[in-house]
Length: 138
Image (cartoon, rainbow, N blue to C red):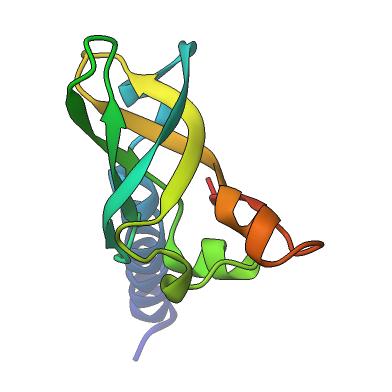
């Protein structure tokens, strides 16, 4: 094999590796593109469902709206691994518990938000001294 052929094969391999490493990063959306930092929200309600999935988990909460009716909100969080590193477990999110989620609302006006912090108010009573608030791994 000639030096030129070897160098060509190495160059093609390097470019292929670079494409494989960069493609997932480019496919990932930017927080600012979908959610507005000018629309902070604090949602207190009942956890209805937790989707512990990659690349982002989703918390579903039933929140009492201004008119008194229940509104369903979907809150995008960080990855399950990022949340685990901050001390959260899948078992922390039991449907029916009350939670407070702080974050930023969607730009499109839908009941979707980027979650930044979750608080478990019941822990203040049931587990005094235990951690009650966690960042959501964004």
